[in-house]
Image (tube, rainbow, N blue to C red; front, side, top):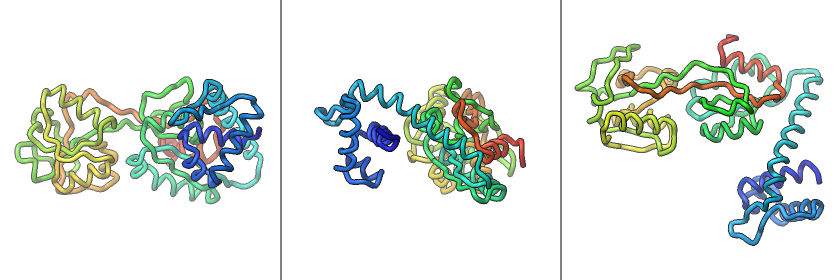
Length: 301
C-alpha cells in the first residue's frame, strides 16, 4: 500500500463513483478498480460495499478514510517543511475563499505576492463557506478566508475587518426612501422597504438567511423578483433595477460607485459577519503564506 493508492481510496470515498473519480484522476476505470481491489486485498478487508446502489463505505472503510486523511495531511506537511530547506523562493500557495470575496480581496493580494515571490504559483480555491470550513479543517489550504463560527480546536484564526452589509436600491425604486449622496449610507427600517421587489440569493446561503430573518423580524412577506446563485449576479440585477438586494459594502466598493444605486444600512439588523483567516493548527506555514496573512490583516502594505 502506498500513498498514491491511499489517495485513490480517499478520492473514491468523496463521490463513491468509479467513473467520475477515474476521470478526475486521469486513469481508466478498470485501473482504478484494480488499485482499490489491491489495497483491499492487502488489508484483508473490504472498504466499499458494492452490493448497494449507490455504493457505500463499509465500517472498515469509514475508519480507514478518517485515519488516512490525517496520514496524507502529515505527509504533505512533511514535504512542505522539508521544502523550507531548499534555496530560492518557489512553490505553490493555495488559498480558500468564497467567489465574492475573491473578487475584491484577491487581485491586489495576488499581485503583491507575485511581486515579492515571483516564483510562487497562487491557486485560488473558490467555494462556499461551508465547504471552506470543512476543507480548511482538513488542511487542504495554506490559508482560508471564511466567516465565523469555525472549529477553533482544529483551526487557528486571525480576525479581519468585519463585513458591513447594505441594501442596494436602484434610483427607480427609491421614491419613498431617504435620498443618499455618494459616500453616505442612510439608515432605514426594514418595514420602509417592504413594498420593494427583491433580488435574493438561493436558499441556504448566508445572505439569504439574513434576508429571511429580517423579513420574519419585520413580519413582512417580500416580493421576490429574482433568485440568483451569487453575489455578483445579485449586484448586476440591482444595477439594472430588477430589485433591491443585500450586499457586503466591501464588495460594492470593489466594484466601484454606481450613481444609479443608493446604499442603505438596515436598522436593527442583528446579523453580523466576522471574516477570519483560518489555518489548520500545526500546519507548516511557508514565508509566502505568512506574507499573505500579514497583507490580509493589515500588518503589511
